[in-house]
Image (cartoon, rainbow, N blue to C red; front, side, top):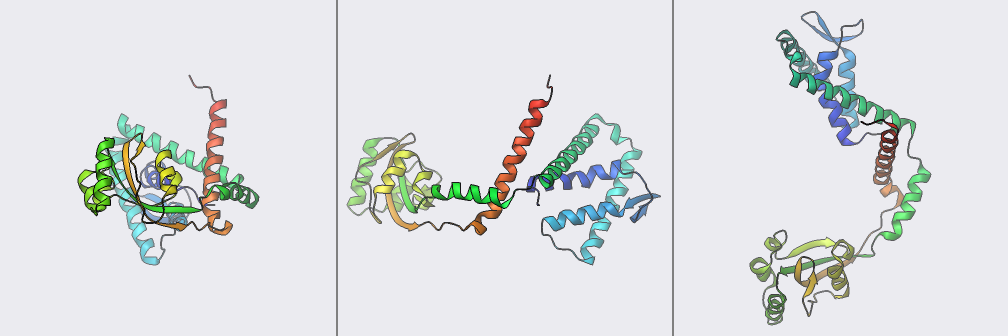
Length: 265
């Protein structure tokens, strides 16, 4: 079972720094020996495993590059130790934080392995979500202004043949869409604030709102450019995303349970 991307990032960061500091020479397979200090093969194997999880390529050339990286890290880490940089409060705090992140990520990995999301749970969640998926989505444009009279004037100009795109660029205070002629791209009506979504749902393709639509943001002039049916993903198509979501919920519950048991002063 794959870990969330932020988990892998934290582990990789910890390996790149803390591992070279905390590793102790032991009798095991090694990648190289630097000034008498062994770089264990397990360190390279761990990095390769993380790369495989992220579907990154593997080859003899890449392994040689990683070996060189580990050697470089060991050389620099040894020099840092000679200078006593590990005793710096700031460095010590960073190393402690990286150690803690590695332990946290290891615990999360172990928890997810011991508590996998089963197919029944995924199917149940899919059946719960499926009815909430909107039947349609709309491609709309809008012009947003502060005053109702300004919105009425814009509607009058549009009915006389004015360019919606030009008026949006000149008049709209929605900085996110005005540079695109008011284009809001495809979205279900429910994604918008209620008055906007309700007005949009009543329009026919190519139709303009006859009156300004007021919302908490101001007054909207809306035009529906197109609409289409929403393709509902199959269970198999939705399974990876639902599994990841359920994993996240399980981890959050685990954290809440541990926090509830902890004595925090």
